[in-house]
Amino acid sequence: MKHLALIIFSLSCLFQTSLCGQILGEELLNGEPKIDIRFNYNQKFILVDIKFSILPLTFILDTGAEHLILFKKEYSDILGLKYDKRINLIGADLNQEVYALITRNIPFQVGKSKVINRDFIVLEEDFLHLDKLTGESIDGIIGGRLMRGIVLELDYKKRKLSLHDRDRFKTPGKGFTEVDIEIRNHKPYIKSNLTLDNGEKIEVDLLLDSGAALPFLLLLDTDSSLQLPEKVVKGHIGRGLGGNVIGFMSQTSKFELTPNFVFEQLLTSYQDVVDPQNLTISDKNGLLGNPLLERFHIFIDYVSNKLYLKPHKNYNKKFKFDMSGLVLYAFGQNLDNYYVKNVVEGSPAEEAGILPGDRIVRVGLVRSKMLSLPQIYNKLKKKEGKKVKLHIEREGKTLKKSIVLRDFFKKMN
Image 1 (cartoon, rainbow, N blue to C red):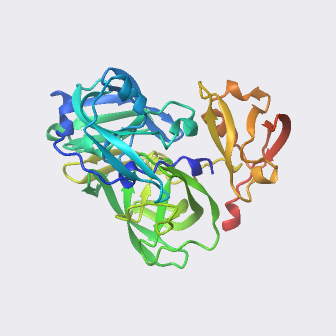
Image 2: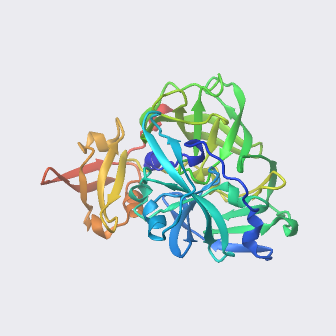
């Protein structure tokens, strides 16, 4: 359940705008056949070091988004950048008006690539607060428009992404499966097969989204056959510009990424696209995120509309999530203080009497300030039956709580 709160719904789905005149991504290569870029993998987000003008920042690599987006306007203000226009964004609640600015021709470098000039969308206010979700500073997004004209390689095991010159790219050899995909608005889509609980088999159009920290999301009502299962867990499945996005968790009977790569009882998130509290442009039936994609070595050919997949050992093993039902946020100057943002209904955390707003003081024998947010979550996905002792602070009082970890999705089988 750890990643219920860690989905980043691609910002291209949250605003409507167009930035034109961008040069193909191969300019980044500066004549080299490829460049390698190391990344940090935090809470299932691919975090890349970039330079925004002269500032070193950290951006998410998001194949499910289109543009370059800066979350924190204070950085562009410090640099004295000029803004070309102000645009209205659509909040997740369809009512709150939020805005962004466009700044042009900003020097940009990813890893050790060539410095190029690009246009950026700058949020007037950071509504996503991904720092709180990860415990690490996150300053923006690298969208798919930057990949035009190149091949993107993702090697999750080595924590490395590579940008390949398409003209000198050699098709991956032994162990790789070639799959046809479609590139729409600089984003990759794949058609896969899904078997429903009633045995019906349907084709679904899915976004390959490296900006999503959940395995599999289905958008209800994008197909008449896609209905909410009878047994679900309700919870917060993401963050939008208007706040938390509510959805459901369950398991799918059978999912065939390709005929060769099959997942049984795949943990699945569901979002109701007609719910006014959510906003999703339904040009797809759902998406595949990093927890599933990381089980493969991947090449995305943005020119030839091809995907190359090489599975890791036991690629279709059961997905591990914490068994507590806690959704935690980091806060403070160093993001080393933690509080409970949400508690999943019917979860061990709720049964233990933990409430939203409780501050985590100690996990076991260790003070929480000595732990990172990923380290705390790791303690919450131990073996079933494991007791995790917490000290929490509530209304000025310190309380002791014990969570007995449990896979509460077993009830659905």
